[in-house]
Every structure is written in C-alpha cells, then in structure tokens.
Image (cartoon, chains in turn purple, cyan):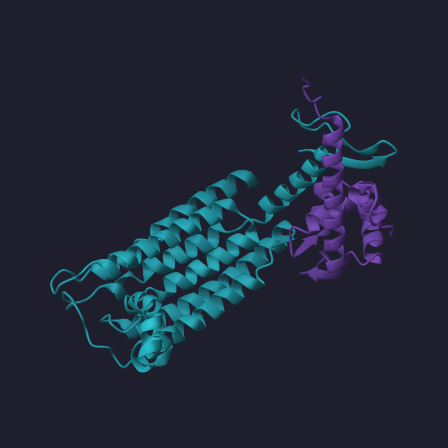
Length: 114
Length: 267
C-alpha cells in the first residue's frame, strides 16, 4: 500500500484505498459495525468474484476483517472495517478534500480588479 | 439508484456515474463529486440500518403501561413520609403510594427493554445485511438503570447526612434530582440517556429531534413541580400520573412516524 506524506494532496491517496470499488466497500463498512457481503454486492453492483477479489486485497492490507459463518443453513460472510481501515479511509477523505480545496482555488471565478 | 465509478487519472480525480437515474450526473466528476458520491453511499447505508422506531414505540408503551402505578388512591398530602422499600425498588422513588411496585416494574421494564432492543437490532441487522453498533447503547441503558437504583440513596445522603458545607454546595443539583426521584421519574431520564446514545449511533437527525423533545418535556414537567409552591390540596390523585405520562406521546408519535417512513422506504 503506497501512502504518501506531505507535498501534493494526491500523495495522500493510497492505491489500495483509492480504487473505486474498494473505496465504496470501505465507505459502507465505516457506517456499520459489520456489513454482509450480499449487501455490498447489491449496493456496489459487483459480481461475487469481483467483490471477492477486492475484499481479499483489503483483508491482505489489514483494512478489513472478514468473518465467515452461517445464519441457519445459509452461509453468510460479514466484513468489519479495522482501525487501520478507518484511518486509511479518513486519510483518503482528507486528501480528497484538500484536492477539492485546491481545485476550487485554481478554478474559481476571477477576482474583480480595480 | 446511482452507481458511482471512481478512477484516478493524470489530470486528477474523476468519477463516472452510471446512468440509472435521471438525476445522476452524466460526466466525469471532480473530487467534490467524488466526495458527494461517498456521502450518498453513507446515506444509503445509514437509511438501510435505521431501526429506531421500535425502541421509540417500546419505551413510549412502557411509560404508558406504568400509568396505574402513578395513580394515588386518595388526594396526596403535600408531603408524605418516606417508605422503607427494598433497595432494588429505588427507581420508583419513595413518596408515591405504589413506589415499591413502580420500582420493581421499572427495573424489569428497563432491563428488559434494553435487551429486547439489542435483540431487535441484531435481528434487523442480520435481515438487511448491515449491523448497527448497539453495544454502547445497551451499556448506557444498563449503567443508567444501576445509577438510577442508587441515585436516591446518594442524593439523600448528600442532602441530609453530609457536612453542611457539602450539603449546601450541592443542594442546587441534589434537591431537584431528588424531586425527580420522588416522583418516580428517574426511569424517564434513563430512557433519555439511552435514546441520546442511540441517536448518536444511528446518526439520525429525526431520532435526535424526537429525543430532544422528549428530554425537554421531562425537564419542563419536573421544573414545574419543583418551582410551583404546592399547598395541601393542590395536587390530586392524578397529578403525578399526568407528569409521568406527558412525555410518552412524544416517543409514541415519533415511533409511529419512523415506522411508516421506514415502511415506505422498504416498499
């Protein structure tokens, strides 16, 4: 996981977190104690295989914890964001906000003169 | 429904939004739109896990069900001597005629109510696939109940058995709180604490607003009793009942509205 420090705000973006689907997974997971994989699949409109690959990347980076279990006879997989995951998501949001601030500064309307 | 696709490029951050909704933006977006799409995902998840209609209705009904225990059999005197009730009945105060029964009722109702709510949130979370973190809520409820049990003892000790300097320095808070306890309304405060914690966990403005209205009603009722200079005969056998019941409709109406809005969203 590459996490920049200082300099341009894009240095604060992590390759692992910034990927669109993984950012979506972390955003949803941060809103709950645990989220079921089926909910993520529906909310992010991903195939089971695709979602599974992204979850593996996030678990490998210790950003989420995966609990595999059963609800009655049906297998259910729940994911929980870790402290590192929460911190990485916060850093990503901070970097995006800083980018937005710079974007607005550069792209804002010209100041009146005279 | 909208689906947001994020990507980074040499020009900065971009997000493309699939067009499943007529209101969805159709072009590549800047970081602001990316942040907005994350906020939309958060909102959707929050709405999915909201289930606070049940605790609102449950605690509103529990207050209403306690009504018979707040009715006195005759017009109460301005002051009644304290009763020698068991310590576990502290939640019922000890100035009311049915203090002991009220204390037992609230002990069971509060502990049962909080545990039932915990079970409800676990069941709802498993059904929709998003679990709300309710541990702090139940902890606040159980600790609040225990504090409510010992509160009258501590207040009376501070007011009557401590050094005069301590007694007079703390009387501004102990006297009104002892009044709340004597009227058997400490359970109302325990419910308020639990709902405030739940509103924080649910991140719901509606639940926060309902809880604030409820707290205001509880405080106003007790301020009225505390500041009014009641003389013998001013209170009738239903006076305390009215005070105890007044905040209940706020929870019931809030719960019913939340139930119908939740039902509308899920259909």
